[in-house]
Image 1 (cartoon, rainbow, N blue to C red):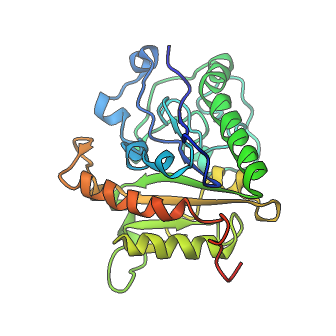
Image 2: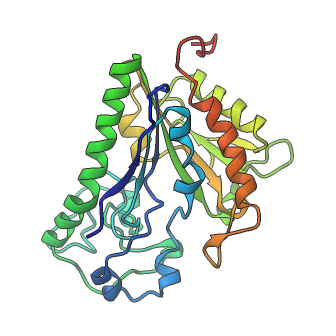
Length: 285
């Protein structure tokens, strides 16, 4: 039986941060694979493959890391629980206009990357609810608890929502000092965290050797929107990393730079995990 998530806790909580990797899951239920029309490689095209490994050292610096085990193609944890697709799930009525659902990218996805259809026909509402019960609710219940506990320990909680993006997605990204960005930080245009946090994260990741842009082409998804409550001392920041930096996107395996990129992220984590703790708030706060 697949566990709904992997949780790595520090031996001692010294950081108010929580790191989340909701799209790195790669444990595909056999019945799900049997139902898809796609190859094993194609069905994995929506994964944020290896992001959990890139951020695996967060507990070494006193912060927990929660990572998905079920894949995004099975349940998308970065969607609202009510984003159900009537084109995929029998018995769901159409309501309003939701561009994610229209594109087949609801909480139970109809497509993976490049619009590839996962399966023919519909699934039952019961099947959809079972997926949410198995994967979605346990992850979000635990993430919510982690943030509440961090706020109780430290007076605030910082959620770093960790993702990767296809290199091609950066074709439309604005240049940063003449270069394509390698990491996109998303704070939903200032609504999911206070300015000091995105400023500090940008400086830290720049010092680690990454070219940083903000909110374009990715400003943050459901997780940053739902959990980011700066007025309630919970700040959420999305981190999107160019996959081509650390993996072969076609073969879905780490490339020759994986160890180097991992070490650079570890260096950044040693500082990101100190943000918000006593004496490490920026003067702008």
